[in-house]
Length: 141
Image (cartoon, rainbow, N blue to C red; front, top):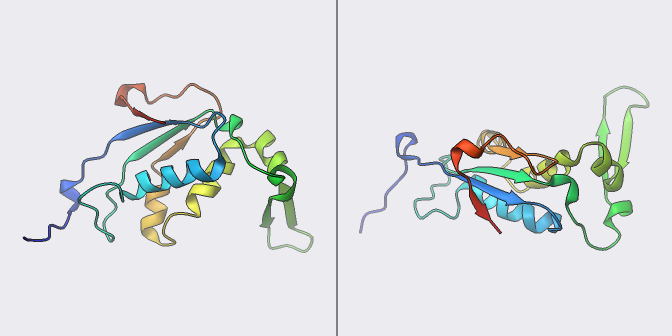
C-alpha cells in the first residue's frame, strides 16, 4: 500500500458551526483546533495546511469551571515602562468575548507559519448571528 501525500490542489475545505453557549472553554477549543489543523481527516499531512473552516457563535455565553473567572489572567506588555497589564477572564469576557476563545484555540495550534494560517480560518461571533450561511456549515455538537 502506498502512502498518499496531500498537495494544495487536493485540499477540500468544509465549514463547521459550533455553538459555544454553556460549553466549557477548553473542550470547545480542543474541538476547534482539531478541525482547523485537519487531524480528523484521513489524508492528514503534518506539513500541509489541510484543515477546515470553523465558525463559533455565542462566544459571550462560554462556560468555565471552578474559580477561573477571577483566577485566570491574561497579560500584555506594551514595551514601555509601566506598560504591563493584567486582566482577569471575567473582565475580558465582558469587553472582548471573542478573544477568549481565539486565545485558547491559538495555544493549541502549531507555533509556526502553519499555525498562523490555521487561525485565520477561525471565525468567532459573540452573538447567535453569523454571515456564513451561504457556505452551509455543518453543526458540531
